[in-house]
Amino acid sequence: MHGRLIVFEGVEGGGKTTQLRQCGEWLQTSGLLESLGKKGEKISVVVTREPGGTSLGQGLRQLLLVEGSAQADTNSPTAPLQDRTELLLYGADRAQHVEEFIKPHLRQGAIILCDRYTDSTIAYQGYGRGLDLGLIRTVNQIATDGLESDLTIWLDVDVEVGLKRAQQRGKTDRIEEASWEFHQRVQQGFRALHQQHPQRIVQVNANCSQSEVHASIQEILRQRLSLWFQQLSRA
Image (cartoon, rainbow, N blue to C red; front, side, top):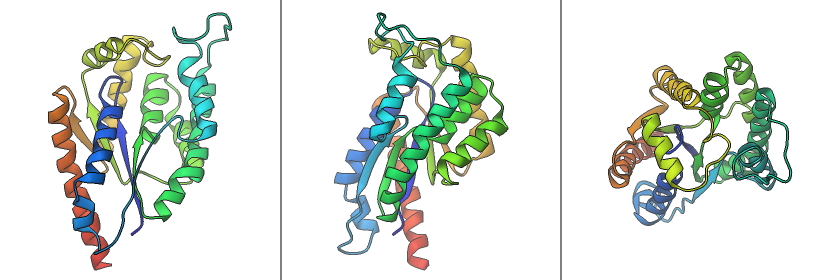
């Protein structure tokens, strides 16, 4: 089986990382994949993130999220990261991630759960920063070599709720520390993307409890995985 790329997206505080980890554990232990696949077939589940899914990406993640934030080393001040620089750094992280990690695992038939991908760049750098959407599509195309997610789970949380959750974690990164207006524009970006790609991007109400959100995602994954395996068996 050719693998599948499932992405978790949304504004800050939506619970992406927690839900992704829980879904990874569920897929590995529930027996769902074994029941859908061929007898004796082993389907691996891997989790990753952007930025930071490779060794190179870990350094870029530091530049993108920590440098210039409240948790950065104040003894080593740096100039503010320019918006186009930010866009290109995300593109560099993604290009390395796709070639080094994502494509090889897809060829091996793995189910990949990824914390953020191309839609984040459109929402944050396009709608949030106001960079040209055509430019961003070009950067995404170069970085991914045209590889899109098979499914994107959009954890839709109210901006106020999400930012409050992020602040309660204790440490905030450079993106989380941006203005409320910025995060509102990002949310508008995710909403627009969902309207443009309703088959690929599935909305989940992330204002609910963790258990309710997880149950909703489980149902989405059951349906999509069943459909994918049925298509494979007919091929």
